[in-house]
Image (cartoon, rainbow, N blue to C red; front, side, top):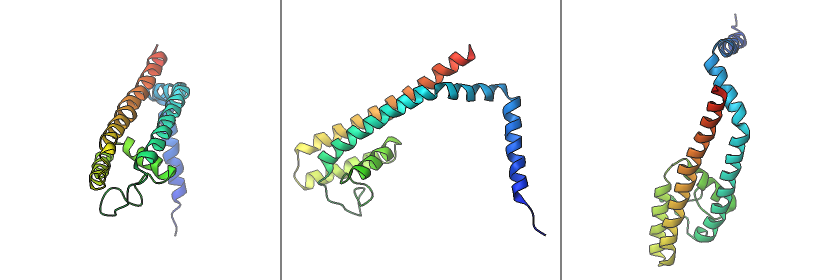
Length: 153
């Protein structure tokens, strides 16, 4: 005797659709997101452009650092290729241990006696964090809030 779980899933989806029909606030939020899609897409394109620029700059500044599995700069987190640079910067834009990566890069630059790159490392990471995290998150929230106000009127 088997139980058909697909029927239970259909009931869950039907319950969600019924909730969408009855809740005016939820309809307003979905309408706001629908209206803001164009502006959200523009903000995401601007973020992608910023990611591209900083990935190229990171490859030029930090592409020659050696990989060490005991530090943050390893085979997964490095600036050797464009793809890995983009992944590191995307990870850092979420706030995940960007400062540990920065400190390991500073430590390697001190070991290699690359004193000219020490300040550039700090400027790079602080500028990327400030622009990528604080400004873009606030702009995205502002776009959604603006569209919500328009929809509410």
